[in-house]
Length: 167
Image 1 (spheres, rainbow, N blue to C red):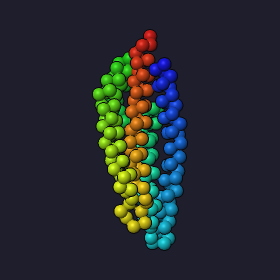
Image 2 (cartoon, rainbow, N blue to C red):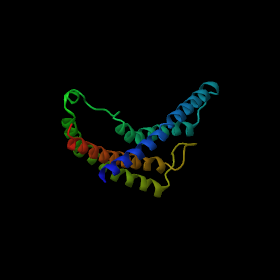
Image 3 (tube, one colour):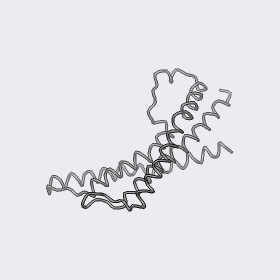
Image 4 (cartoon, rainbow, N blue to C red):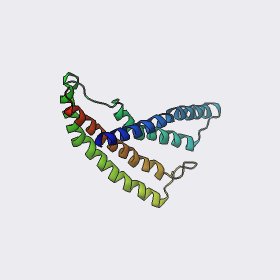
């Protein structure tokens, strides 16, 4: 049953990651529009600049779990590559439990309260012409770390499977 849960989490993160990856195309288009406005008309729009960093934030926050799933995250490989698969699995489990999971829990707890406060204040951009509903991007922090936490759990289940295998 744990393996089915792990597969389901990974499939969800893969699906979400593939959909969110299209935001990079949207971001490129927005940046090109911003550059065109700036050089052709000598002006820029505040909402475009804010939307650029909102989309970049979504790519980073929601894409983190997808990068972790695809093993594209940052890892110090000085010694790691020389270990056997079971030793790697032990290290992965240990560091995921000791570092990643507590970090995700702390960020989820603090970012949720941060986003709720923003929602109740109906926080918007302080800049003229900026985007309304700033709490949406703040809730994305919480959502991104929930996805990362779920992927960390799936990762541990997969590494336990590696430890139980005969190879």
